[in-house]
Image 1 (cartoon, rainbow, N blue to C red):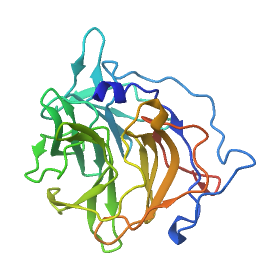
Image 2: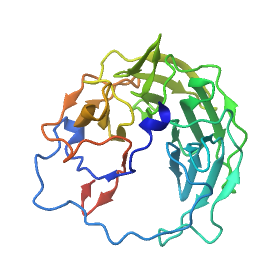
Image 3: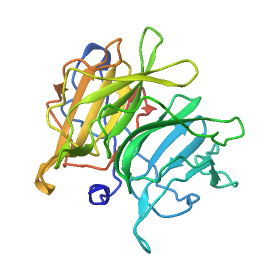
Amino acid sequence: MSGFHASTLGILAFLMAAGTASGQSLPDAFEKPPVELETWQATANFTGPRASHAAVIAGNRIVLLGGYSVDPSYTLFDDVQVASIGNDGLITAAGWQKTQPFKIARSGLAAVTDGKFVYISGGYSQQGTLADIQYARLNEDGTVGPWQTSSKAMLVPRSNHRMELIQTGQGKKYLAAIAGVGEIGADTVHFDHLEVAEIATDGSVGEWKMCPFHLKGGRSAPATFVNGSRLYVVGGWGDLLLSDVFNDIQHAPLRPDGCADPWYTNPTGLLMPLYGHTLALARAGGNTV
């Protein structure tokens, strides 16, 4: 299941995020792209081709985590690789370095960082779908410290979900686990809910709670991002096969408890349905894209 969900192409989708603080929708159309990318450049490869992995950016570092490979045989990874990004945007000459692995190899995990710690959640392992939360400190030398397993697991085991860091105006930080796929009894279910947990000042994770408002349509492998005080969920795969891939863009204001208020569906969506894609939020030319 997890491998089939993760076998899509990694497509980078750029979206204009305008008027998010006031709840306005994204623009209906663009006369031209809000940002034009220069030619893509190849840089240093990480070790081991893989899919359904996770990655986070912490300062000028990329942290790569887990995933799976089918070459030469099906293999799940528990490794963590770190690389620095130079001023030219390329991986520096030091390349990728392996650091502390996390516990239990998996694919379809989610990851996020608050700049001090890296957090991972869930995923699909040889033991089945997971609900655990692990976190490790980011060291000044670029490595990742020993992984700790939180005593507070997610309420629902899930893989191919997304995780975002929610920071409230009251100074609190939350982990938000969004959508994904898992088993309910004998059924495979694509989730339409969010659950959140507060992060303490020492990096530990509190109790998880289910948020009251649900996405329109359960899905795995969407793309997500936070812009200001709004959470966006874009695309994903529903309960059916390829006829149930979404092109919608849903967004909701964030509450002081880390949950999302009722969801709005943007009047225009992606140009094609996507799942397993990635969104990158950037500032360019006075726009947020």
